[in-house]
Length: 253
Image (cartoon, rainbow, N blue to C red; front, side, top):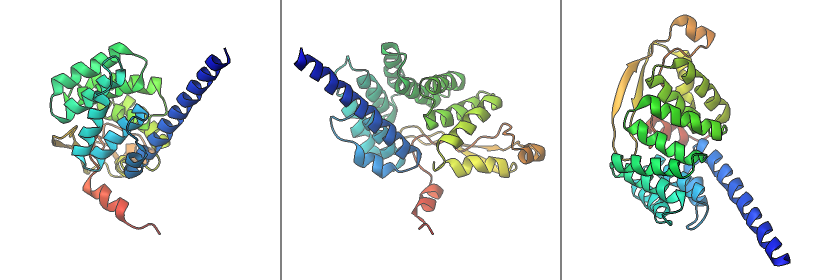
């Protein structure tokens, strides 16, 4: 009986430690500390950390390392939901969008209450330019995990594309609160300040690259009042821009 109780206590402690580590690593990711995220990931460790590490490799432009990390998740037992999430990430990087969609949907079917499953499905739907369904998936992530800043970021982008600037504004406001050090923050903030500039949206998810440009339609009164209007911030779920890299390399005073 004592041994059984000890086993339960140790399992609970390990689970709590995993959750804490995953939360801390997510905050590093949201602050643009991608190398620290990568360094924190251990083979056979918390799969949530490995998932964030894979995305960090992509942000660093290390696509081969990202693919290896997704593959490590995909190598887990087929009954493990992380197998499907990792497989979807791997397939998306290989431009197998249909396969990635099937794997992500299978993950959601396995556990509809898991935020990462909906997050991955949202990324795949965004790649397919299915804006309203993608927005719904990121909305679901924020319901399951309100502290996930990038779910709000991508949710805002998807709602912009789905012609819902009101919901875009709500998501971006949460993103700015939750991720004050995010690399994308200056671009999001600049929407308030310059309504006439062209905003580049990178639709690169995985290894492909595609960009569109939109004129920011914010009126002067909207900018002065801080309203969001229907402007689109940079959309780049896989890489950090050259401008952002330069900014992060500059020494702090």
